[in-house]
Amino acid sequence: MFQPLAGTRVVDLTQVLAGPYAAYQLALMGAEVLKIEPPGVGDWSRDKGHLPELNAEGMGLTYLTQNANKKSVTLNLKSAEGLEILKRLISDADVFIENFRPGTISRLGLSFDTVREINPKIVYCSISAFGQDGEMSSRPAYDHVIQGMSGIMKTTGTLDTGPQKVGAPYIDYATGLNAAFAIVSALHETRRTGEAVHLDVAMLDTSMLLMASLLTSHLTGGWMPVPSGNEAWSQSPSSGAFETVDGLLMLAANNDRQFNALCIAVNRGDILEDRRWNDAANRACNAKELRAELVGIFKTRSAIEWEKLLAAAGVPAAKVRSLDEVLAEDHARTREFVRAMKWLHHPEDIHLPTLGFKANRQVIGPTVVPPRLGADTSSVLHELGFSDEDLRRLAENVVI
Image (cartoon, rainbow, N blue to C red; front, top):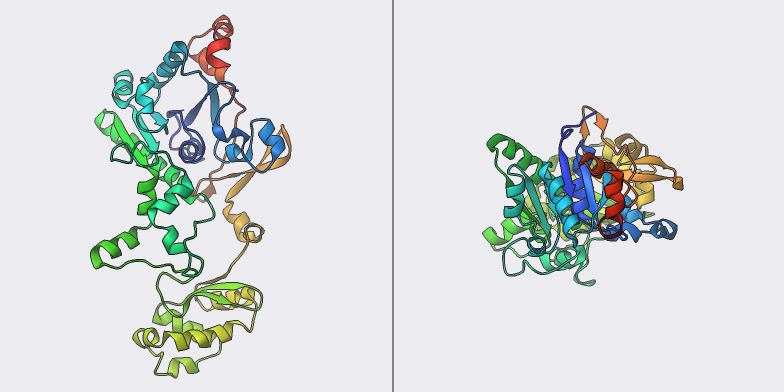
């Protein structure tokens, strides 16, 4: 198994999506992740999801998605003893992750400077909406708010629809990946220098860098992005979305090789001989006419027929699929985007995301189902030297 973070302990104080997803990546790579949760209620996402019966158990699908391979420890951080226990856990950790609004963690007595005194080699990761500095730093936000603020919504709709957000909470998950990348990098740095590192990961920063080419084009060339709908980023008339007999086909014939292969594959070699379209410059000048030709061609067959025909010709193309369609295909099973796990508390398998890459041809997925609230509190506190009598004493105000 690919477990590069085996022996690494992570104290995870995050909730909802971005922070827990970052810690989940570390857990899949072998880190021991201690998920610290408020007694009684736990992570905000525990009662969220599309199966009400799981929500009622505090094991909602939203929580399950990014909390496998972790341990759940409940601590009341408003109590002096709960806070002291957390500090003891941090003193023996390699990584500390928090996603409070900037300023909140300092009021808890867990600022980077304080934690660095406790553990001089700690990787301390702060995840927030807008970052730890700047005039917006204290503002709260969620994925869709950042989508609206970042500018991406004004590029994804059309002039008719107006701005459209991306359907999935992609900024949350991208921020989690960004944070995991930062943490793994910082672990190398602390081991190289012996000094603590404070990471400042922001949703807005991540969202802007997901549009890196737009930023460069705008700031360097003065270009202003406009709503592009389903059109390709290349703006090539032989790329983008085309109607077929039974749905949409996404096509990318951007360069001469691809365009030539496209014309041959659709049995329209005559297009290549037309002076209006015999090179990229002419195709751009006569884009409307070329587009009309292609629209007529693609309306003669089904999307999957065109996909197979064009794939065989080396032309990037794909039928626009629903989620159930793509997951039903053999390729999805080969790549194993998710792993099915048996779970005693639910009659059906739960399907949890795997790591986003293969290592040594292996898919790296979860091996332990997400923990119930506080499931590991006793065992972790026993490791700290607390006795059963201590746990009974702590139960009322600290851990339950």
